[in-house]
Figure 1 (cartoon, rainbow, N blue to C red):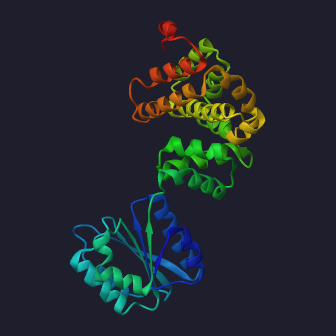
Figure 2: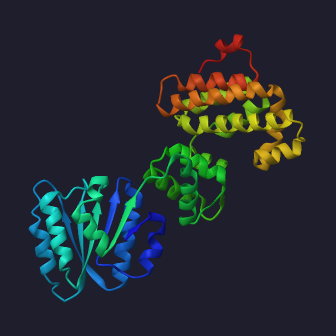
Figure 3: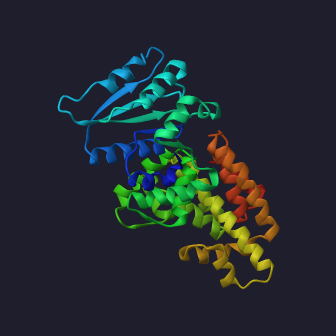
Length: 343
């Protein structure tokens, strides 16, 4: 059978199959799926494991040898076959089909493979695996799914996180699930079972900085351009990653654009703030800042955050200057005095 990654734990709980193929090019989820097979096999009494690494010089006769050999203590065993490029070739395809035609009773075959393309999925060897066992294709989450994946991963590591925290971790790690998982594990070590929000993420990521990212955000929202520029310079001097700084500014601009639009349509401030969904500690700051510019100007600022995001994520040399320009504009600083606030 073919099984989606998120349905795989339930499928595995129904009982073990002769063969499992875990394929794909996303290493964290592939590792998770393979670990689940190994754990389920171990619980079922498969106590030994033999690993076969397929490379250009690999002799596919080794698979037949592994199938025909027996454990010294007659234990059940896992034969783990690793095919990094997802292409066993003609000899490998024939060897896999021969194995599955007469699989050993005391062995489970776990194949960990690179992505198997559409042509590979139509091959005889793939169909033989599909008929005898379970094929799991691992795909990275799409961009709009990343925050949800991060939130789920945070729960897996015992963290109680809000959506702002999950979104920040997702944006910081840009779809690299291994990096995201490392960030989450660090947060779990630092914060324990405390509730995780965006300020907690920022503090944990940049806890050595003398200038807080949220000090910068508060200065911009308050319209204090001088303090915003000084704080931004301090963050840069401390070697802080500009990604969370840009994230904080972008979040504020987007929330203020939504808030301004709601107010322009005649919505009451309290209901408009509920629409934005801002955390209580930010509502007073947003309420003070939103009147500084008309709704159309807030929309223009939102468009500017897209260009800022490109500069920051591509590590452009002008990223910090772009951050300063936009933050001063949001704070209401006239462009004519930009020169005295260079970083």
